[in-house]
Amino acid sequence: MTGIFDSGIGGLTVVKALLKLLPEESFIYLGDTARTPYGNKSADTIIEYAKKDAKFLLDAGCDSLIIACNSVSAVATDILRELYPDVKIFEVITPAVDAAIATGATRIGVIGTRATIASGIYQKKIQNGYAKVQVLSKPCPLFVSLVEEGWMNERETKQIARKYLTVFREKSYQTLILGCTHYPLLTSVIQRAVGKKIHLIDSAEEVIQKYKKEAATKKEAATKTYFLTDISPHSVAIAQKWLGKKVHFEKADI
Amino acid sequence: MTGIFDSGIGGLTVVKALLKLLPEESFIYLGDTARTPYGNKSADTIIEYAKKDAKFLLDAGCDSLIIACNSVSAVATDILRELYPDVKIFEVITPAVDAAIATGATRIGVIGTRATIASGIYQKKIQNGYAKVQVLSKPCPLFVSLVEEGWMNERETKQIARKYLTVFREKSYQTLILGCTHYPLLTSVIQRAVGKKIHLIDSAEEVIQKYKKEAATKKEAATKTYFLTDISPHSVAIAQKWLGKKVHFEKADI
Image (spheres, chains in turn green, red):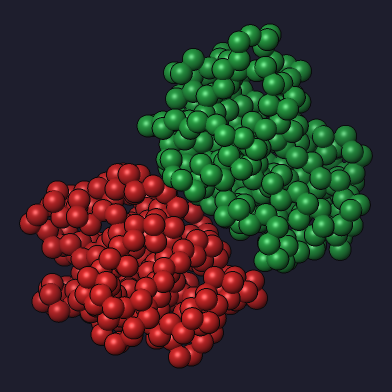
């Protein structure tokens, strides 16, 4: 069984992709809503939290992990792999980079949290794969707050998106990686801000494609369990709205 | 020596009021930036964090506490007072309520985080003091993200302020309590959104007025120490900008 974790409820976009592609797969989801968001925090703090999240899921019986958070993927993947060499660990960055390179773009944009962009990891991975690609990375920190507020289609959200993203349109970027698992919830707003010609890469979908190829288990009586470290009426309501269905959230003390 | 704590750097508005009114006062500030923000989280989680924050400051030698966070003041004051009956504990709500009632307003508005507004504490305290006052409370969760982003004067911030606050102008509220220590940083935007006639109450200033009357210590060689639980370049830069000077932040592990 796989364990999926994120700083909060943003990682549910990865769950949604999993439910769509592999509806019979068993999993445990852990959202660290008590410490959310991670993306504005330092790498040290994010690593500390990521270790706790992973330990919780492995103790609960998971034998593979999907890091459904770009900030954690950026700063803690190597450390978790070193800590748990026998556990198959999926992160959201490499599959998104591979998909972006596969589009053949020579100018690739990346948006994400402050921690993800500061790590420089997308730039490194893209240019390792294909040195001539030009990369422009930009943190869009308010997107997470807007999504968690449920403001997916407000005028203010569209305006902030234009403010953050016009540069990608102006400088003729061809592909844009949504380097934060919250951002797929803003797909239509982002697409409008950058223009129809720019190809958007959704890291949530890409990681599940990779997981499907490499680790999906045989069909079994599927169990799907959802944990949050803080349960508030607002976050449960927003989570259920995103998933498009009622699920029960259990409290995890970690 | 007093200990001042907040969920993050918002409580520095209380420090700023202290530095202005009592420049010779010694204090230790603790901002829980590793778990920030508190205001969207459940009361249980906020109480757990508040206990850790208070313990850290008392262990460090503080003999009084100023809770520089409305969400903690709303849900954890009684619990902290019960835990530490010998410690003088100041919270930001009562002084703001007293100041609002003193304006003679019959319609008082309150804005704050989701946790603070959901607690209903402002409403209760105002109507306990003066039953005939009409109270309208409204959560404005995006304000904290906008302030932490440093977007104090952006067009988008003004627009979001109008969206949240027009109701107070339309319904002729006379006084508005800024029930979150981040909000004084948006004073001019908020004042413009509600109109010049509405009197704004700044809970950061009011709690320091009360502290000055009841607990300020005699002048001594003042020490001012600042702790954060997570230190990132962005939060340090923003904090120093707000304080208007360079201060050194130490890392607290709690």
